[in-house]
Image 1: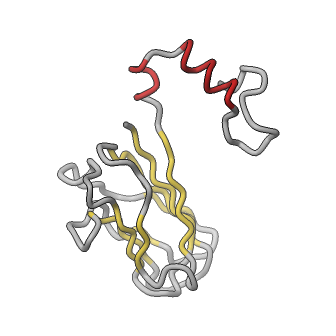
Image 2: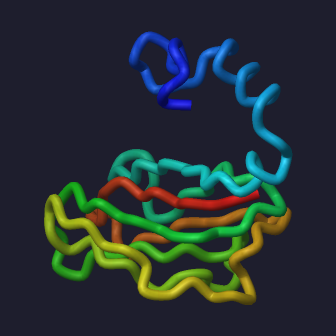
Length: 138
């Protein structure tokens, strides 16, 4: 896609209709389903209060979680779990130091497929803020 002229919309990073048409005409369904997708969730003190839901589609398989901390918080963490207070999908991912990048140490193989309950991100406290990137495939 990057070599296709006009693949993004004025540098904003979103595919334009011509690029999507090109992909549909030139890539098979197996190739498209193998492409990793990313859900970005910004956790802020005013917007979340500890729990945030994601928009990852049902049936997707969670592959990785990367967290960038936007503040220093001594015991800062975020955990991905099955929505509605379900089982933990990941370990507690550190958010202690501003500008630090932390990757999930574990993703539970029993819960990495997204169900109708979705995925909830839970922070240790309201002062734990950052950007969470959830990588998944369909």
